[in-house]
Image (tube, one colour):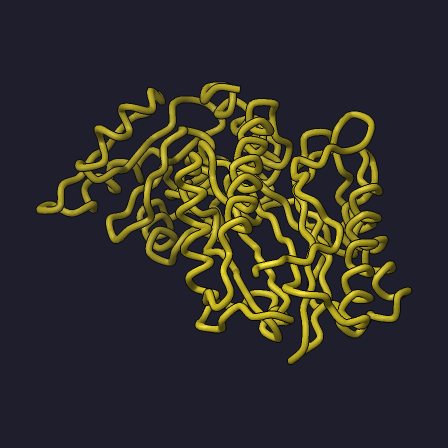
Length: 366
């Protein structure tokens, strides 16, 4: 799907929501529409898209060449640092005077929101449903980019394991993993790698520190890369030396939940039902007290998108939706286990884009 087709879909959604325009700032939605990765900075840049007619863009002059490379047709109002953006926004305000304008409520700053309200004297409302509907179902070319990102990450993880040494610190392992992904063709980390050792594995979003890798430790690695803007997000938990029977029980419960979650994915099932099924496996095994998060989240240009695989979410899964299945258990001060895969809904079920072995793996670093 090319940029023109994406803009046309956006226009239909704007009209469906009863909006008179949407205002988009640099970020995933702008990249989705234009193919260009503009940065949200101190210089305001806003793209206004009406349901009919040509989009209108206010942009710093130094970013104009980058915009021109997108080939997107827009009425451009550029502004220089020495003059400021006021004149450019005033010209745009006349076009969108007293309109109902939808914005990205989870991304737009107070700065842009105030500019729009004060200059247009219009009504600013959340338009998150528009952007969710725009991006929630991935097209075949998007799925292939996810697939490539996953392939790079899994090759990197295999390479990393082959090069682990006793005594390596969490932060060193994370740094090595990032570099390997780049060497294999990843654009950048999709998020800062989470590498945790021993009792620190019980921190779901722990930050890599100076804990060294030793015999008897658990090792949790949660990481991903981007490929042409689309992300991977994979977690595996390993053991250095034979784990205890309690650790094995915890791991096997998470593996059963991961398997049940993946195998329940199909078109027409509610997203929340996947969470119910996976979480019930953990509770049945006696570990309900150690569940700290939902079973998964959507993937795309953002590392966290819709659909959320969370109990109570009644969104029906459709072919082309991409998300994680990542049940976890966390025993504070002792051990955390998470097994995370990236899946895509197909016409008759699902495909796991990630295939790295899930069974309990003992690493021999001698």
